[in-house]
Length: 188
Image 1 (cartoon, rainbow, N blue to C red):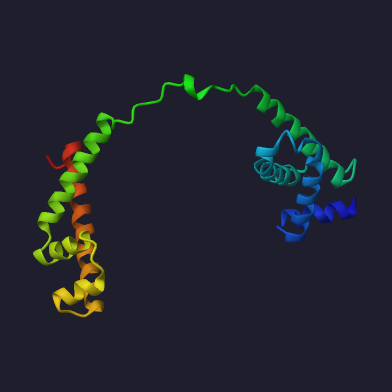
Image 2: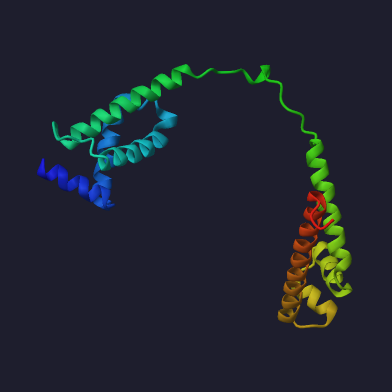
């Protein structure tokens, strides 16, 4: 019992060696159920380790048996519960399903339209130098090609792109706040 108490204390403290030993006990206890739980085995192992840790920290281990026996019994019961749950699953033939339409919902269309309107306002608010950089990026130009075309150093170009992006994000945030205020009637 003393060794088990020490092991429980070390487990609850997060001792890697003890965790590895408990995991090995769990895996050994899975042997009779390995085939039936194949797909769920890893998830179930994690669940059992977590629940076992919680149970041990709550003091459910009375010491009537060895800790290893307690773990094996715990795994046994959880495995049977999972197998029963798997047996209750209703399998549905995919051919019988009516799949939802891939067309965007009215809410999706409205959200996209609002996002496009905000993006348009942001672009219009930006200086021509930023819009020129974005056109080049949209064309797929690399920074070295862009710097040659503009006649500036690549580092300076990156700084410009960064400043333009920062300005655009600030403008976007401002427009989104204003749009939200209009929707809710704040400031009207």
